Image (tube, each protein chain N blue to C red):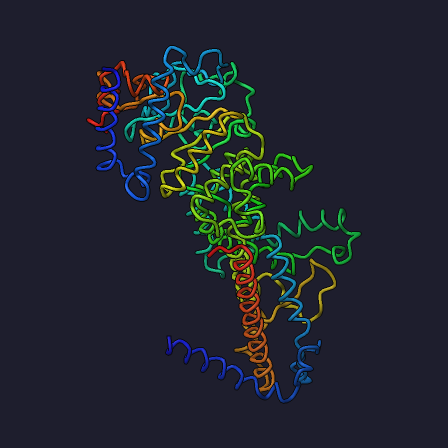
Length: 288
Length: 315
């Protein structure tokens, strides 16, 4: 316990130490700066922060309903013979190395999106701002979907654990009152595990924010701010992974470390918020 | 002569109960009170033979050669008898005789268990419960159920009672309906000042009465009770039994119990089940031994197995 805490403190201190030149050069302005130029040695993180938040939140928005649906299917609807194999399949998805997933993103998903999905979205949903533009095999959309694929198994297996922990006599109580299975799920099972679902979702968010390799492979690593959902962009973790070993100047290296500091702060905040929500929900429900 | 017989049965019955039947009502608390009640009830019933409790009453459930199996394993087989309106009918018998299984078939709660299958016919007001076009959800709305362990939702007392009302869209006068249900379940006076408190803050007996109120709120026709007092202390048990006595004026009650004194205290009619090995396969499954007015079963059992059970020689 103490060793763990010590390692944590040392790690954070080390990262902050590395970022120090950039912190003293750009200060808080780093957060709002939009330039990332190794030639002029000017660095700002705004576009990257936006890229990270956008890809993670969109991925979360798609992944959480799918994950909960999978968990509900596995705990409530699937016949007993399907539960174990499908459950294992979902967990196997979490075991795929992200670099392999990214490779699949480059070879299969990117071209497919470029040829079929994005043209359709542009012609049908183009009236919505940010959804109009030109198809691209790399960009925000494939990054979001890769992250979705990575989050679904995490949130699904947590949700499944939670939902299968709902006491069967509570479920029976609801059914005996003439509730349909869906009413039972919505009014008894889900509220019962709501706090845990929030915590699981936050875990998925943290995973998405921190994912570097697979995102780098499909997002296009653009230095320009994306004008639409299909255009190449970049995230903090992606930029960090792609540029650190080839950084041209000491200040660029320090700025990349600064990105790491921001990532640490984001995961810290995520964790705190999750804790707060979980605690509040527990108090309201009076359940452990 | 007859009276001697009866007291003999009851004596040996109570001996058995205090030793083996670990129902709290008889072991802790006020065994004297519970015992006195069951004796008084039996004496009262013995005096009124000739006029069967079910005569002139409508049949609510008709069981015709009912067998229930789980994944091919027969839990109870070939049960046939009727359950009548506004009476309390008890299912008694040793563990494993399938009485709970049978009860859970009567509101199709068994549908929820994978592999459960009902053969034969269970009719409800003449209609086949398992017939095509019968909606199990509607069946459960009309035929309420109270479980062995109190299972209130982790919500407020009010929301527990309102649960069924809300899902069935009975939202007009919600508060009145909740109050009415709590009054019917003899719980209103104890909780009226803390309706917004968590149901989990109630005692076990109060929780069980809350579960009864929750079932009553949606205006069912029948209440099925699966050993409703087996997890309760003696005072709470008597409260539940008193409630059964009142509720049967408005509802048909079926109560599973392994406590014979409880059956004697609350039930007008009793069905006794036992475990039997199949002659061909050797598989053990529950069977109905006999059913009829409770006083007949306890005082003039027609089957030697019933007599053995009610006198405490087995079970």
